[in-house]
Length: 196
Ligand code: T5A
Ligand code: NA
Image (cartoon, rainbow, N blue to C red; front, side, top):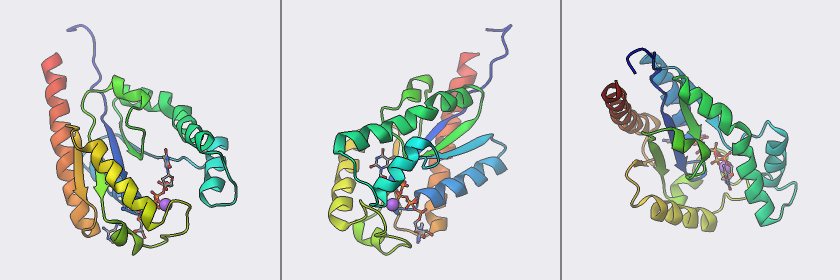
């Protein structure tokens, strides 16, 4: 590949966790940090409530509209597919994309090699103390406790998943996330230079 100019692709950084675990706060902080480090970064959150499909999801979550369970599941999926292509293009052009919630078997994973997934782990009780909790459909202890269990089971044997204790302060959580991401980006650089 000596004649070709190869763009170092961006990383796809997935942040998962319970409702109010602090995902959006941490994604913003990580975006700022990586920009300061000289990376091109984009931040996307799901559900993206601004698209036509996103508006349906939003009214479902706020309880002002009902949806059949399979239908809402597909709407969440469709909401990701709407912009999967543009995420893939961004990654291929060297932009690191931070996604606030994503399906684990997402479309763009095959395009990428080092994909840090950060799971913001917090107890349902701790999360319930946070601002705005309880406003949406799934924000109750029974649901969140079950979600936490399922995330743990799903992520248990996954190599690229960093479980972060999201019950700590904003700054502490942010430091843990930065360390995990720096490890992963270093790994990405190694892959990039081995390829040359
Ligand atoms: N959903 C979503 C599905 O069912 N299927 C899907 O496919 C997808 C994509 C909405 C719902 O949709 C469901 C899951 C959800 O039930 P969402 O819009 O991502 O999904 O909603 P939330 O997960 O609830 O996102 P939030 O924005 O409400 O919570 P975040 O992003 O986890 O938390 P954040 O950063 O907004 O922080 C919440 C509050 O806590 C404070 C913040 O200042 C804020 O007030 N906070 C802290 N306080 C103390 N210490 C810390 N370390 C703190 N970190 C944040
Ligand atoms: Na929520």
